[in-house]
Length: 377
Image (cartoon, rainbow, N blue to C red; front, side, top):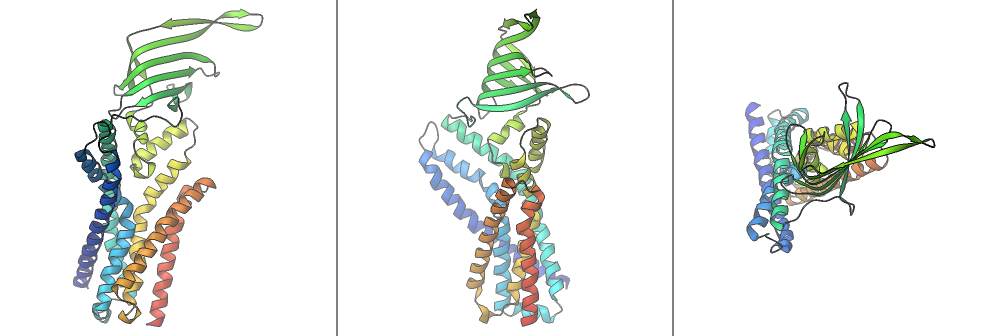
């Protein structure tokens, strides 16, 4: 039985790798065609477009793995069925439960590769690709508003409680992490404006500080009262530079360069904590974090969904027919995964529940199909 499991694993792994290479070649071609529109813009050349496409391949590996695992497994199992190899395996003692266990073992390995790609390879490659592209074009990242990006920051005391509140406006975020046109509006515990800080540039000075250049400081302090209203004293200064401590880091700001679904789970967790501490909406990033946790399980479920195709005899359809059915199932799963993520975000469902529904549904369908082919064989 060990020899049988090893043979099954090698054939499925080879089929999954073959399908993955084919999908990557297809997506790389489309990405390259899309990048040709920007070739010649600024300093963006053909070699930059090729490098950008290659750096985007790890993200495609991570995104495509459930569909690739499904199609590759269906292809291998359909090939076994067409050559009567699977019939021989069943005669040798490969029961439905043992076959499902063997597929699950292979799925764990594929899921581990998926996690490694999504956590260690895809995020830095995606960030480097975006930096390369922006640097070559000569562009920068700005917010959704004309005034730039707005962030919320806190100054915390020794006990961790927020003592002051800041609203930070960043005009531009350059690919190397430098900030331009920075404005900070700081409020005290009673939500009274205490300082306005302007800087033409800011560069991160670890740990936990930014070196501001071209600084203009405006401070507001009470200087008494008149007619029941407080009098304010305004103090202005223009130092050449200033060290500004903040909880904001280049890693947190790096979420502007890559989409939440392509961030690592650790980066998502840190950003969600930052948003929660500043009482901001975390729905989109909590959904992305939950998908990161469920995604490896989805790979195993997709491979289990392919198992019933091995029990269909050749007269029920050739390999091409079964692979086509696998492609349709994979596309349906992909769209349902996105659909329930958006539904969970709109209806404020628990993130883990929203992203688990397609995988749970696919697993139930796999078990139902296995039971059906077991009764009809």
